[in-house]
Length: 350
Image 1 (cartoon, rainbow, N blue to C red):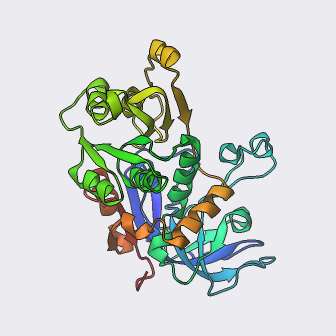
Image 2: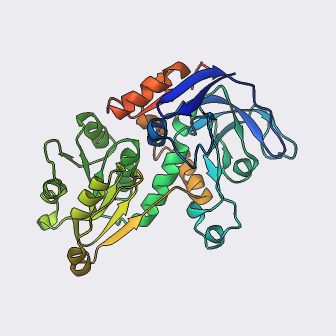
């Protein structure tokens, strides 16, 4: 089969590789739609020690498709069934899982290989994080299930209430999902970015206000532009960082009102340092929360959102492309020319 193979940072090749064969508990899926994401872009540029402990490696983790074959012992999935799966599964036995913090599991099972004609699902993911996809949900709408599950996790940490003012810093695909879900929760959303395209997308998904920070170099300047749009100029009730840059973390915190909460969601590069004003944090009682990954509960919740139409994954898709356009699609994401791209390794309708 044809598959994308990651050899080293900056080098992805479409190659012919052996067809996968399922072992006990495993499932092989014909990939009907595979979605690009920010983690793919970061991994392509600088590698990822958890996703790719050894190279070369299969690439990609957001997909939906049809079961092609099942291994011994698989009971709940049969060939031809429409399915979608998350990219990991927790072990259920480490300290984090026992404490109910499955996103921090020390022994996560990872899945890679969505940018291929077929993908092999590990037994742990089949058991705990694979779901039948309802007939009315297009494959392309379901492919971004995994990042939506992480956003659902993030939303659970925000404490957003009806009528709150929320700033979303960074309006790529993750930020767009936050805009949509915060709006559904009854918040007034301020979208903050320096891409006119992304800001327009945020408005389409529910943002009430847009702040273009082009030309504003300091976090304090950017924060001031956001505060102007808040009641009394005090700042936002909740700030969500969805860009993955330390300076944007600082920017988000600077937009908070006294007693506000910042959800620091985007993953900065190793070695990043964030400055925090301890006087402001003490006297204004900020709450700063880091949020990482998802859990089986948040994955199931995300799927219900997709099935109900409360969030349509197709709203995140810029274009459909063949598998061979993977690298170009990642570069287009980096340049802000698009949100997500759907690759169709099998061809045909999604």
